[in-house]
Image (cartoon, rainbow over all chains, first blue to last red; front, side):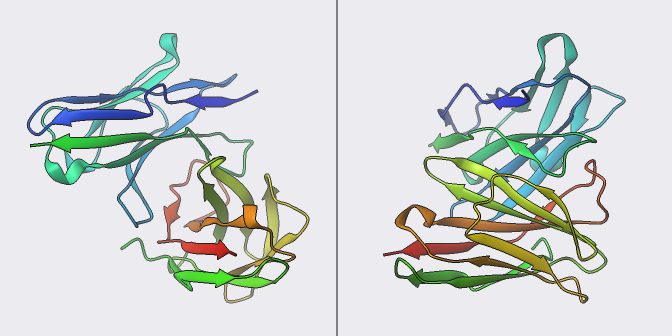
Length: 113
Length: 114
């Protein structure tokens, strides 16, 4: 069965420090991978997506993610976080045969001064 | 602003009642998706419509139904509401039915069942 795992439910990071959010997926073929961010009281905003090609993907707000097929991972990174990055981050996987996105449980990011 | 609109923003109702949530997709998008976000279940796909036809079904209860109209807006109908139906309901839209399409999410409708 297909699945998406975000191992970290909650991460606290200092402003200016680097951030890495983990995402692992289980899927038989090459998945289509997404990272979304949900700010408090808001909908989900797409940060970046990977379909094929270069395994290092650049997104909005200074985020990037790297697809590693051998590790079934698609981790999200940001070199220096800002207070406005405090939000919940969701990894999602989609595939040709699916009419949906399957989301991970989300990682809540808290940014401290 | 994603371009996807949802009304109402908040809905408070009682158990056993029926409500309708409305979604207008981005201009030009033909697919509409409905998702439910709850504390215990996380974000779950409910149903997808493409150009008026049901395309895919997820974990949607029989008490729930949806449709997409000729003008491409969609409605999600929830009936015989239970306390456990309290959740944030998101609508998303994409250009076509291809699952590689980026889905753009609306701000959600928060449903509270008392």
